[in-house]
Structures are given as C-alpha cells and as structure tokens.
Image (tube, rainbow, N blue to C red):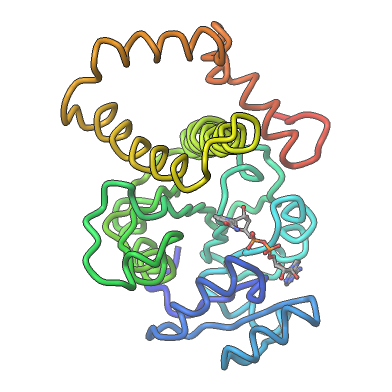
Length: 285
Ligand SMILES: NC(=O)c1ccc[n+]([C@@H]2O[C@H](COP(=O)([O-])OP(=O)(O)OC[C@H]3O[C@@H](n4cnc5c(N)ncnc54)[C@H](O)[C@@H]3O)[C@@H](O)[C@H]2O)c1
C-alpha cells in the first residue's frame, strides 16, 4: 500500500452515504474526487458545492477508492473499478456483506478494506443541541467505527484510520476486526437483532395505542422512558430489574422469542441472510 493516502475518489457521491462522507471530506486536506452516475444525485453533489469528476480519469490517480454504491451493485461496479486502480491503492467499501460474499473483484496488487460507522452510542454523553440532533453520526455526535483491513499492517491500518476518522467524523476510535467478524456485527448483531427489536417495540407501541386504546402520549412517554432504563439495567447494571419485571421478561421471551434463536450465529444462517440481502442465490466460497 502507498504509505501516504492523499487522493481519494468517492463513487456514489450523491447517495445517502456518499453525501454524508463527502461533506466531511470537503472540510479536509485530502484531495477528493466525487463521482456519481444518476443525474438526480449529481444535482445533489453540485448543490452541496462539490465538483463532479469522471471516474475513469480520477480512479487511476487515487490512493483510496471508496465504493459508496448499493451493495447489490458492488459486484458489477468493482469489476469496472478494480482494473483501473493504481498498484498499492485501497478499495474501501462501507459494508461487509459483498466482501463477505466474495463479490468484490480481486487483484493481488491492491488492498481491500471495509469501514462501517457504529453510530453514536445510546450511552453517549451529549452536550450540545447539535450532538443531540445527530442520531446517525458523522456530524456532531462522536461515534466509533468497526473496520476490516485484513492485509494491512498496524502502520497501514493507522494511516487508513485517519481517512476513516475524517469521513465518519467525529470518531472516537476505529476497531479493527476481520470481514467475517464485521459481518457478524452487521447484519447479525445490529440489524437482525437490534434493529428487529426496535421495530418490534414500535409495533408493540402501535398495538397499545390502536388496539388497546391507550392515549398515544401516555404510551410513548411510558415506552421511551422504559427503553432507556431497560438498556441501562441490561447493559450497565445500573440497578437490577425488579422480581416482578424478571417474571414479565421471562414471559415475553417464552412468547416472543423462539427457543433456538441463537442459531442466527451459525455461519450457514449468516450466509443465508447475507445472500438474501444481496439478492443472490447463495454465497460461493
Ligand atoms: N444508508 C445507510 O444508512 C448506510 C449505513 C452504513 C453503510 N452503508 C453502506 O453504504 C453503501 C452505499 O449505501 P447508500 O445507502 O448510501 O446507497 P444509495 O442508494 O443511497 O446511494 C448509492 C449511490 O451510488 C450511485 N451509483 C451507483 N452506481 C454507481 C457508479 N457505478 N458510479 C457512481 N455512482 C454510482 C447511485 O446513483 C446512488 O446515488 C452501501 O455499501 C451500504 O451498505 C449505508
């Protein structure tokens, strides 16, 4: 890998992640090229004060090429991009699914990395209105990043971490894991479990209001406060759940959760969900 990373290309610069990371790169000292395919998204890039670049012209000069394109497009897009990259450059993707599924085009003389934002923690101390408003991260509220750079030395990881800290900034720390571990973090831990439970709670709120007829304000007040204390007790042991609450928790587990739910940590289940996400038949190894 190039020991210094100075020149960066963002492909998909007008998409959701592309716009976020580009806004942070725009304030940095890196030379960044913004590439975008769709005319509507191109307008967004320009409206944000960034110039559009032609991918074929800038990729060969870039130390890092970031593919901020949909995961289902990564096979095709990487097959176009990888042959154009300079030797020693890094191809950086923002989600582990395609890398885990071996869909990214391979070359021996470039490096591969994945960096995914953790989003600001529910336990983060937030002080300013901007920090409170920044639910996603990358604007004002500090967040961690989980990343993979399996071929990278400690020095190379440190250099790439500087890029990652800019694009997802403010960043507290970058945690280096393998691609497989990153895939267990997302989707398994945070989407299959945490996001699913989030939507379950929303459905339970709707049921309480619409079917039972509890006033919405009362139900929301009760739920939002209890989400906070449930997380504090479960993860931080701030105080124990009451004996009656423990009985209700067990009742909930018996009625809502399948006894074998931890099978989602079997690798064949991980393969299954990732194949489904990428809209492919199966993961090939
Ligand atoms: N959206 C999120 O919350 C989120 C969070 C973390 C990671 N990610 C990851 O970020 C990546 C991008 O996701 P997104 O949600 O921003 O997608 P998106 O659909 O919002 O944006 C993708 C953009 O890429 C453009 N594009 C497609 N092919 C292109 C090409 N060949 N050249 C240039 N531009 C091209 C599209 O026009 C679009 O503007 C994915 O890997 C996703 O998993 C997304």
